[in-house]
Length: 197
Image 1 (cartoon, rainbow, N blue to C red):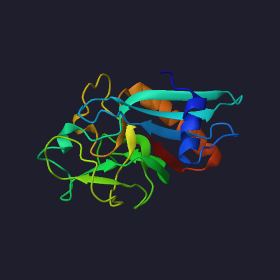
Image 2: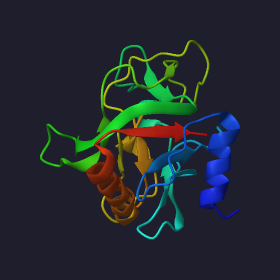
Image 3: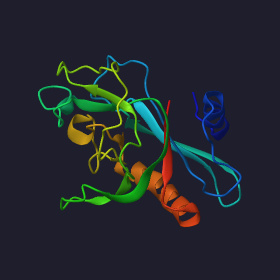
Image 4: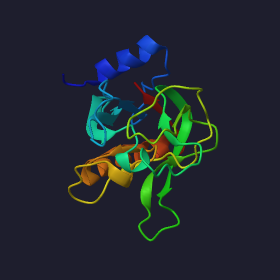
């Protein structure tokens, strides 16, 4: 199935989510999670953006990515004593701004970074069985849930690249995704909603 601007718009409308249109580069950042949760550690989801360009053409750019943690964080290593955070589907308003991912490391780079506390809802997976657990109470206690890329050049497994983050597989495609966000931020301010289907 080819994803189009209108297809994404209708998905927003069907769920009653806010969809930004009528202005150039007003970015709608979205993710589409694969229904097959038995597949772990693969970039089998879609992360993208729908917007209207300088001439008000309708643009949809979907990229291979993951909306789920990698196997690294689903086994013995959870990164949080309460378990690894898995983002719940839904619209997460004003959850990201453009900032620095890995800010305390020499490998830091521009990305969509969490804008504040309590802006995301999701589940904690703490059974360390290497499988996704999307049950239990919805929590808002995650920090550092960013929209970023995997490694430079070819990255085939999610591995350590997502402990909750929404991760575009290809670094060059990530730069395209981020560039739309940068233009949107220049025009409308540096806050973004993210919608996960």
